[in-house]
Structure formats: structure tokens, C-alpha cells
Length: 163
Image (cartoon, rainbow, N blue to C red; front, side):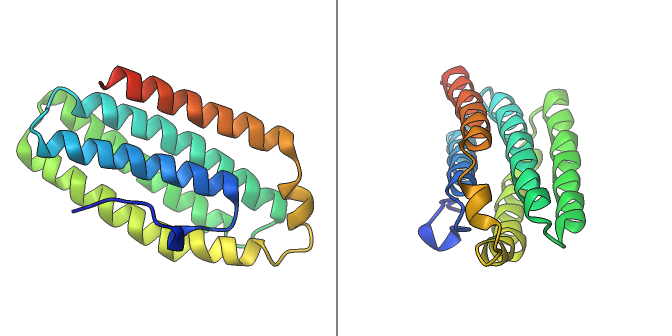
């Protein structure tokens, strides 16, 4: 199963698109490690993925709150559910990396990323760009720089640690 971000997954908000690309890249790295049988790399990559996902979710939810997105509450619940499920998987990996856990992880991540991005993030993006306050929010560089720098720092640390 290939996990790859493509331009048809763009939500129209460069900051969020960049973070989605990073999440897909890290998920692809995880799949590569699992395919190669590199069990030692898996827990660290999953921990980085968890950290990057939480940073992304916070940024995405800030966008939604700033624009007064009516679906924010449901979106936040989906994010919380994902991070809780990922934490359970992390604990299972800490106990012992069994092939069944790795297979479950691969299916979970692939399915969740596809379904959430297409079913929740893309509709938000389509809604967001139509809002009168979108241009003002998009022009606020301080929030974009901070969250993008945070995501890059997490990604850089994770990619360095997992090599």
C-alpha cells in the first residue's frame, strides 16, 4: 500500500497542505521501515508521527476556530480519536513489535489519512476559501511561521533520529 500525498489532496491552505505532505512523508517512511523489516525504527517513527499529527491538528483547529468553521467540534473529536488510537498502538509497540501490530498500524494509518483528508479536511478547505475573512487569516504570517517552523523542527528531529 503506497501512502503518497498528491495535489488532488490540497485543501487550498498552503500551511496545512505542507503539514499534510509531511505527515504523508513520515507515514511513507514508516511503511518503508515495516516493509524492510526494520522493527527497531518503527516505534521512533510512530512517536514522531504522533507528535507531528498533534502539532498539525492544533494548527488546523486554530484555522477552523479563526474562521468559525461550523464543523470544528466534530473535527476536533476525530483528531482526539486518532491520537488516542495512535497512543494505544504506541503502547502495543512498546510491549513488543509483533507483525500483527505492524499490519494493523499500516491499515489504520492508510485508511485514516485517506478518509479523514478526503472526508473532513477537503470539505473544510473548500468551505474556508469561500469565507470573507479567509484572506485576512491567510495573510497573518506570525501564526503560519510559528506552526510551520514547529512542524519542520519535529520532522527534522524525527528524520534524523530514525536514520
